[in-house]
Picture (tube, one colour):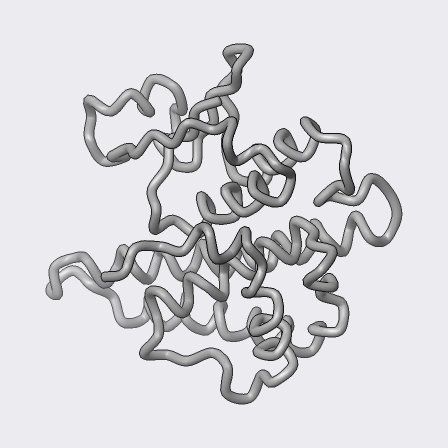
Length: 203
């Protein structure tokens, strides 16, 4: 398998964490990609030109991160990251959606900050920031529903990746104050090898 990726993407990190958790990391060839280049091969593979994009051994091209994680989860016989049925399944998928939404808004803020100052919109940035912090507040309220760090789910991995991205790109806006339960969960869960093995580069 080949993964088109960037070390700094929180969505890529979620996929890589999942690969580590299910024992498939060593089967994935990591291929750095420039999604902005018109000559990039990802334009032919993924019409959205987004990462992560996975090229499977049997010739399929899969995107985006929830689909790739589900595919990886189908390739092993151990405890699944995505519960098969019942309330546990919908809880894990809902947590993934919440965390992915945080990442969506955070990446948009990051891209906005990289635009020329004359083109930036403070209103746009404020809207995305508000969405992030509302979601963080909800995760604090629902921290008791987050998975045991010793038994990860796709929801837990997605939350870990989102919190890690906030620390990476928005350390100047600390998310821990006022959210002790979420902070404690993150402190414990971030000791997992899958999190430590997928740290973004130091900038």
